Length: 255
Image (cartoon, rainbow, N blue to C red):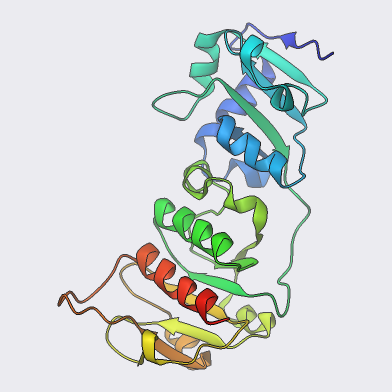
């Protein structure tokens, strides 16, 4: 039976570290760890056969927490509810969280259906695209330098657990993208073949560009083709996360 160790002080080193992980966009890169806040994210980690190194529960929640969550980590702590709220980066703080050790540096996996993020800035867009990628059978997301941090707290929350189903590679240079050894498909709002009329290769790598500037000219030159989405309503553009969902679904449906 797990017996949690209580922590009551805001000055405890672990509490300070958790607060940093919960609020700092890139703290995970220095710490080599993530703070996964809330039952959904924690359960998503376990569902992929992964295990946390540490679990923290609000005192009021510990007695009612699911057994799988309570027994998942080798180290467990309880904290007063007010202290749990002080750690949280959420408007409505969750009553528990896991600390998970990030895997060693990952590399581009050749031949794995991929999504390339070319300097996307919005964390919500990035997290949403990760969800679509995982749902549609893509196994890898490659982020070019300048893209929002893939493991940041906001992207983690928007990803809703999709992170744990994907090989995520950050900080790539444009010249490294061909290492995926797949045909590149770039998205455009005004040129290229219409998505519903083109024959899509599988596996492939969809390239999604910066919200304002679009796909880099370098990647456009490397691409096998440019694809656009028919918009009969007359609008000239779609949110990049919405466009990604449409394109990735088209690939999945054509397999």
